[in-house]
Image (cartoon, rainbow, N blue to C red; front, side, top):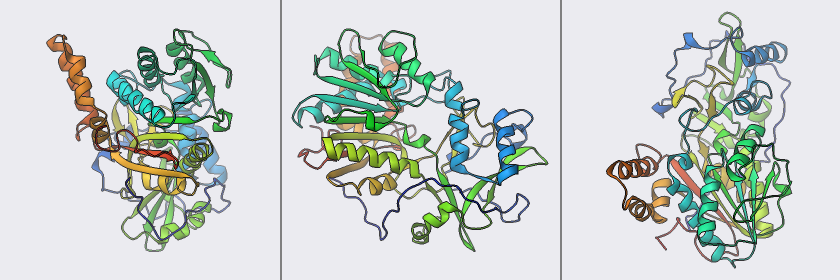
Amino acid sequence: MLSIRQVPYTFLRHVYCLSSCRYQSSTSNESTNISSSDKIKNSSVNSTSWSTSDTNGLVKELSSRIKTGGPITVAEFMRESLLNPKYGYYTRHEVFGKKGDFITAPEISQIFGELLAIWLMYEHSTNGGNDLQLVELGPGRGTLMNDIIRVLRKRKYSDKHTFIALYEASPLMRRRQAELLLNRSFDPIITNEYRIPDINHSLVWIDDLKQLQSRTTYFVTNELFDAYPIHKFQKTAQGWKEIMIDWNPLTKQLQYVLSARQTAMSRLYNNFLSSIDDRQHVEISPQRSVMMQAICKHISNNGGSALIGDYGHWGEKEDTFRGFHKHTIVDPLSDPGNIDITADVDFEELALSGSQIANVQFYGPVSQRNFLYNLGIDIRASTLAKNKTPEEQKEILTAVEKLVSPEHMGERFLYLCVQNSNNKNAPAGFSSPY
């Protein structure tokens, strides 16, 4: 098991709270400087093409809020951009696939889901093989779960004693998942039990982990944590300051500013920020930590494991806040509500927050390249390519290359595994091939 790096501070209780203090105005000469530590984050959209409060309903709504209460946090901006009931990106757009703004690993190749099914069956079989409760957090269109179910069906694995739960906040995506998994177009009711055709597995949708049954549980999450809101901080000559979102009345556009005084979050994280001497920018997500602890509590109480995959790092990256539009990186402020907004996951933050829960242990993080090779992606690709046409073989190998190549997802995408401490075996994919 890879050890978690020890640091000389205790993670504080993570909460969201509002601040009543006023912030420095957008005319201040103390501006935010974008980190150059990761060139891929630079915007490819010219600022003159940005939406304004005249052309974008969410910018207009946020500008009114800023006029009344002052600049808002990046976390508040992310929440509104992604989940605003009227203008939010996830509530109005088909976001996945070639017609969307990004493609996830399950959309690239069926092999990805097949290998995660292998991970699941290995974890389950080496820890008693009792009733199986499988939970996917943020299941997208349901592609990953559909591939996992297909493997379970083919291998006749845990037919009558498998309980599947999908943690999904978007009603639009719940409908898409139902269309794929149940062959029905309807709006699923939270916690209502449905049956998957031809395999008779139980399927429920949830919006709170407390709705899960008290069973040994295996969590799978792929690109969930990067969508959780972050707070951004920058080191200045006057100490750490929170980066805020303001409105410029001249351009009628949103812009970054630094807080004029301490915010609620900069006070809460003061000890942590003061301990950092090797970075100029830091991104912190209390909501990620809250979810991580909820997962760990369930595993601690009921047994099981969690596999967490996402774009991320181990406490070394700085400015990773970015937007995506039609597979192109853009500035997050350029057109909120119409673009995906994300930030890389700090896996060290996840591990430290999760390690506060008793009776859990951690493995990783490991790169997607190493994880998939340990699960046998090369063997599966060779098998799948047999008796295929040259064009089909090329398509299979191209998809695998996207998953494992350092130039694509291979090194930038990481995996962390959490197990109940009673588990005696290293999880599949985190050790030598089993």
